[in-house]
Length: 355
Ligand code: PA5
Image 1: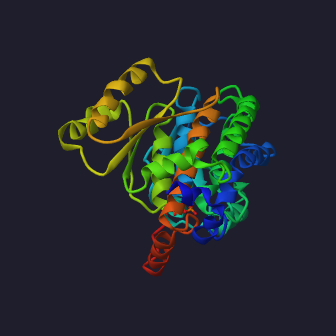
Image 2 (image 1 turned 90 degrees about the vertical axis):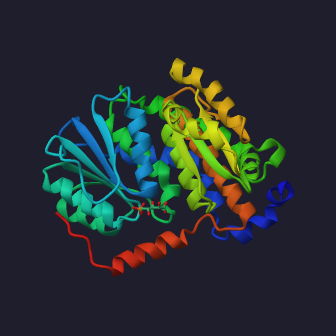
């Protein structure tokens, strides 16, 4: 298995379109995405609440934003996956339609519903129907570059929102944290690239470790949405089912299953961050002891000082691990054929009603 991942000639067969180049470019995409937002301004001042409307890879940006804002932003962030919006959405809400393609029917319907309730709008998209609506209705459009699979455009879906929502940098860390994140991601990206042999490459090592097992990814505070990102990247890139969850919540449910008859073809990874709440950090050891009694378990640690660097460093590690698992499985990480076929099938069915 290790020989396979260290044989660079083998990559083109499973990855003919070069998904690896998109992962290799992650640090640059973060820097580019920050520049993209610099010329944009949110009219109307800070909203009371932000509702991010999206699905799949485009919704994950909302999850990460929500966690970044959690204990620092003076507004609430809520992520909605589906056709409708919460009843509290109104004139004091900023509705962010996050859809890489701009054509996701759930996001289009939810955004129309939010606008009908008087919410201010921002669209984050490469184009599609959402881009058309932004142009037609004069809505602020964060124009994401085309040519990516949606989940690989995460930097462009997330970073401009951070800049837009915190133009002074006082709440979410500003340019300093973004620059640190770029530096950390650049250094980490160099360690994770295909040219680095498995013995020195934590991404390859994790991908190989997961082969033949069902991944279970547990996050803590800042890393809770990252655990979900790992799960969805493993599902879409490597095409393996995965589970995810977060401490302290899993100490109130999942550990019961692990403590009972958890044994099976699972492999557990805890995503750790040096700034966890002390009681959460205290929980990891005993929680890990429960899973470790049943199945192989390990930890992966965030890098960097700022929240953005710590969060995105673990995102990048998971992206590469899912990539290497895809290569080992001989599946193309770029394509999501079943998702695309399903979207076409739904488009052929009756169109959803919009507000
Ligand atoms: O990562 C993917 O390809 C999917 O999860 C998509 O993000 C999801 O289907 C929604 O599409 P879009 O991001 O274009 O709105």
